[in-house]
Length: 430
Image (cartoon, rainbow, N blue to C red; front, side, top):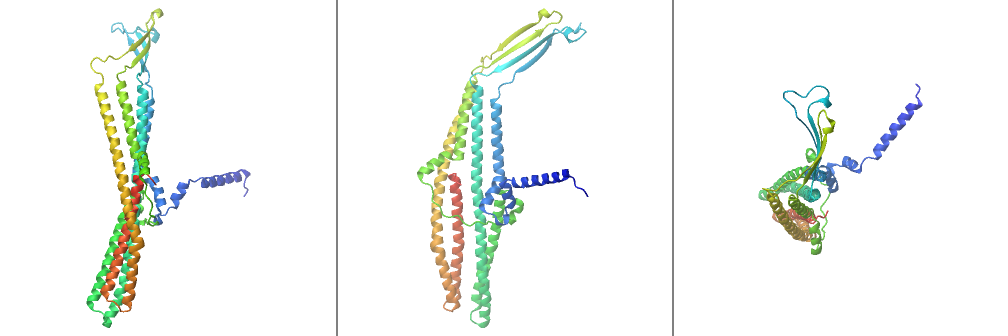
């Protein structure tokens, strides 16, 4: 079988195109394809969040619609073409022959509206500020949704840690129950002591089941935020708890306050309301409609004529008081909303700083003092019980104390993670 040079060239071209396409694949597409929900890091969750979050998509559409309004606001009024005929006799008709020979008067006119008082400029500026506000509102939606993402992710981490602690405790009690059954047969312990051990073992198993139910809820909440509801059951958080970080001082808080997206959106809304008020006042500046026309008379070409016209509205009964008053009220409402937004933002920042400071202190105390002390006490109790130095009640008390401290330490770390997410959202820091 003979292969032509043209066929070889075509095959080489297709191979080169395929290689180029593989090399030009976007990093986001590669990362998305390689993302495993079975071991989902917070960075991978953010990537999916940016691509799939529905609230952000809706806010983006609203911002795009506001930007489209700028095009409409910038447009000049279109001219108007008018055609008319007159002198049509119901008795004689319009006559025979072509259109030029008909017994009718024909008028052709073009008119143009000329806006005065800077209406188009004011309308454009109002639309631009509205679009700016919509973009800031989109950023604010992303800020709040990202805080929800962090909270949901660490909720899943907390549930996973609770499952681990509960299952480890249940397994330890299971071994103790087996050993206690042997000691009961040997007569070393009473049935009452065995029943007490069984109660604690069953309690640990119930806590593990409750933690698994909380994990399922956390998976669903996180899956919605990253647009992976159908794969919620496979999601596992791969990252651990965040490190304790310092908070902002008062000078930085004031700087962040002015740069928050919700404050900027309220500021832009107020500026748009100012331009709208000026536009309402500009309605009292009369617009002018100018036109030219050509009128043709049948038969005698010397009777054809040209004309111009100018029309100006007369404010005899209404002077746009309603529009102006409405615009002034809207401006006042926008100013009050700006002050309200700043107050809420400042309160949110201060509250998040207080919550984060308290959570960081509790986290350090559990990591450095309480948890090591509980582990040491439980280890000593296990050793003493194995040597017969203490009774089963002392052992159970030590285990309960360790178990409760471990669960509280997990809850404290989760509180710090949520407080850190709220602080980042409040201060617009990622």
